[in-house]
Length: 253
Picture 1 (tube, rainbow, N blue to C red):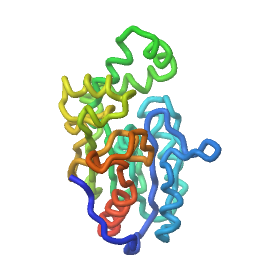
Picture 2 (picture 1 turned 60 degrees about the vertical axis):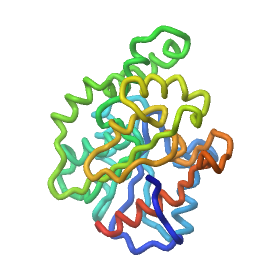
Picture 3 (picture 1 turned 90 degrees about the horizontal axis):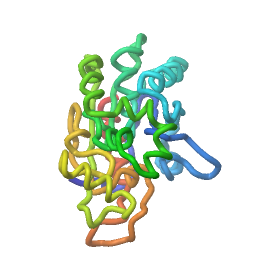
Picture 4 (picture 1 turned 45 degrees about the vertical axis):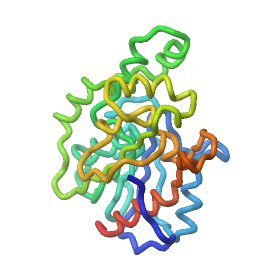
């Protein structure tokens, strides 16, 4: 399913919009933003209450969530969290256990592995140069993203009453994947079905599921690595996604 937007007008949004990055993420490195181009889009749409906190990129969900909770504690007014990938898990933990002031009103997740990802098991257990290089840095974070770990996480992190949970998943057929995502996409397809190269649709659905986006994992945050193709609906249009997302949040605020 694709989002629908006919113009770039937005109704007023009451409260703060907080965008949470995923595993190995950041806010900004020089001219490079994790949510590529989003800050400029928000400025053009008249959104002035958006924040982009930084959490430890390769820490556990618990450690990342505590940093996020400290950041949110300094904010006034209601809060709407938008999490990409692991950022959605950080948001859920804060809402469930670390939001004593009950500021959080909604959580929207984009390709978040709510039920874990077999890619995490691959990274922890496989041999080869890529796991060898990545494992020492990402081991602690990735261990939390195994399906078995996420089963425990979900049991101990119930949704909070009064908070709206929205989610989107993403997927592309194998031939539309950037070549460097295809190996992981095959692993996921064999075990969990359609996916975006990092997270399956099965794992991404949580709360009020908004549907499937034709995108890979990184197109959701503005990074298009595939060749343009009308047939493949590429490049993915992040403007339409975020306008749709923000309109839904405005109705909740």
